[in-house]
Length: 242
Figure (tube, one colour):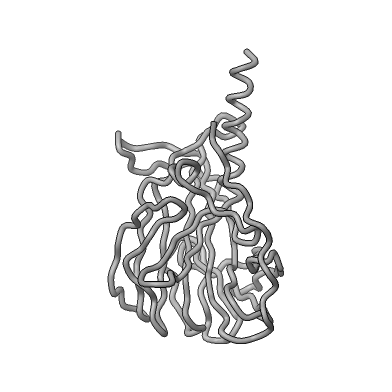
């Protein structure tokens, strides 16, 4: 009985850890783009073997304005997923993992964790493409949040740097939110939303029924000028599943 309790506790901890995590996009030093999983502000990157192995098949699309330039399936590496393209000026990359395994919720139902990410190279206005999507509006530091293609009001957006510097703001009635970006370097804006509506999705063995969907999305941007960034803290240890 004690062994069973420990196993259940570990599974509950893993489910909670996953829902607190995000995926985000980074431009690689050479060619390509990196999709990370963890906590950007805590300098935490999940690895394989570990939680990174939970992903089934992340996909990404390179967008220029309203046009799709190319799409690809991400390839798993030790501490990230790799994409074969980079976003140029005025382009954006969107990525998602729509097949993350369903998990058991505390009330006995099935939950679906649906993470997504966007990378932008400037503040040119973008149209939403993800279910939960944060896009630039054309004004520096201003974003607009969409859910299922419609502006999402009164929702918390968190902006973080790798040093752990954090700012929070709520979207207005039109889904808009504004941040100042004082530091030079990378920023990640994070948003989450839970829909407690039952449904089903395609699965490898047939339809999979779920009771709730936890959407998580990020927007990544590298500020080219500003104050010298605060140093990142020591790397946090990846979660080790038992």
